[in-house]
Length: 293
Image (cartoon, rainbow, N blue to C red):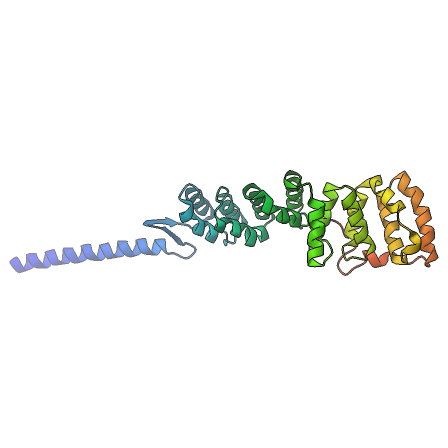
């Protein structure tokens, strides 16, 4: 009788242990099922199986110690979802640590998503306006209209009085023509120095002559006195073609009066076609929104 009782107790305990093992295995499998990952923060574990759960975790991190959260937000910036990357960058809004600033310049501003690039540009200006100037100027040539609009707005906020001299200094120091963003910035600030410099860019057959012409044309009749100072006898045929293009794009009555005169000089050289300027591989008219430099 005693032996039978021991057998029943042993069977019962075996069943309890087996059931416990089964339940434990189910919990583990549910936590590590395909498509799910576990994020560890100290002793905490958070299941991140959807964009909503990741965004919730980012919101939690945004109120924690910045030194703790930065590495995890940086990891979230590598997520394939642009929404997640945007949320992660948004959570770094008030982080002015050297690591966060470097991250903005080295990674966030080059994100594939225009929304993320736009936010990175705003944060760069907010955190370090002086340093962000070159970033803003570069963003003027971004392929996204929204990023270009933000860059133009931020340039109006932070442009120093000597912006034209700075850009000219950069070009001289690096022995190069101005980049597209720099040309657009010069068009934004305007003034004698900017107009004179842009006309010189047009006349030296620079690869950015097309965008320089378009930018100058936006200055309207303010450009005409500078054109009047040019001596056609000292220009080659292609330079004369460029001046004709500029006058045509200004599209004012006063510009129209000058076109006939300049076309006469153009005819002197056999009326060389203007296609050399506008027909380039992959580009028809070089407008401000073209990518690249």
